[in-house]
Picture 1 (tube, helix red, strand yellow):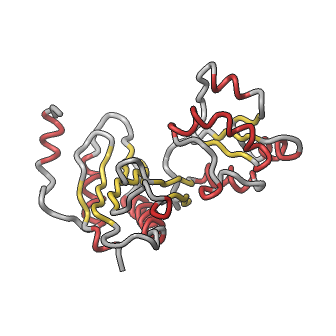
Picture 2 (cartoon, rainbow, N blue to C red):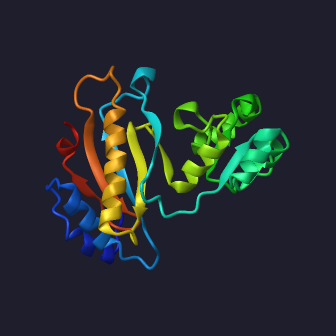
Length: 231
């Protein structure tokens, strides 16, 4: 991939062979986020898991102490009392069966997270082919299939993020925005890493965290020493 002059200049500030500690890495990534917009800072965690085996899957959610810096739009599938509860709790969209053609046929995706009550999963299941590939399918492990829609919405709006293995056994998670303070980014990052370490599958043999890379939208990644996260 051809890189621009600015990218190459930023890359010079990073020692390629060095594995940084958290404080140094966050300082470096925040300092390198010099785009004209508020860049998102993310962590990419390469694991030793093999996601083809169900017992080595990683999936869950965690609430970041300082949120993600992004306004999250929540769609809730609910009916009856739970419809009203979701509306009152601040869901951006609430509905049921009538939303199926809108999403399936019209390509409506004006939402970032989908929550559903268990009794609506039969309806939501019909959207599996379109929601699944986008990582939007509600899941009990992530707390997005629940009767407590108020808590689900409040947690998501407060900065709850979902983590899961992708097809290459890497977890990609937002840590915050470049405008956050180093302390806020550190708090969020440590919260994520604690959750990922706890999520280690018991069936996994060998090294769990292969590499941990912190990066911003338009700058090079900074590699951290994975050993610092494993007690």
